[in-house]
Image (cartoon, rainbow, N blue to C red):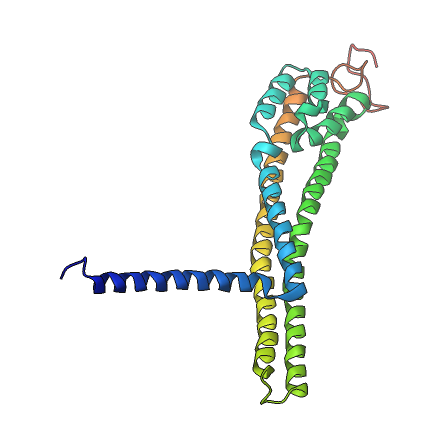
Length: 262
């Protein structure tokens, strides 16, 4: 068989044209899925774009290296080991060192240095700041969860709209009308396309919403353990709370140690 036979070449070109036609049909079909949902479908598409942007932002922000930078952990440990609490507080308050860790530790160090009972209140201050910072991260992911909830509802709304249009077509048009089947099929297609669009947007949004929440929990738990170790270093350093009180503060009314002033 001669591969240069005109008949064979014609057959190969025909097959190539068929493959190209199938590709064009697939592209047209995909475009129909995007544009065939009407106004509600375009709203769902817009929500999908917003969801993609949120996923990218959360993927960058909700990371251990971003919320709990290893370099900051080492620097703070070294300063607390040396008893340099004031330097640690200044380090945490610098804008260039802003992170989940420093935003939690800074209120505790401030309470430790400025309150007469700061050594007893530091853990409470750190716990309150940690709950506030974790709540901020949770609130940041709420938008993704809302999109995951609203998208299938919009798809259902489009389904109802399409079915209403289909029944209106059945009620108002004769079966032998030339546009009857086209109008009926168009309304049913609208109903199914919006449902599909809503589910396509909702499923990854709900999944990633849960993933980000779990990641926040894991990082917050790790940060809590690291902060506990830092508090132990702070207590072991012997640095006092308050400007004029060396050592751990003594509650009011407690007896003075033997041989020392009260």
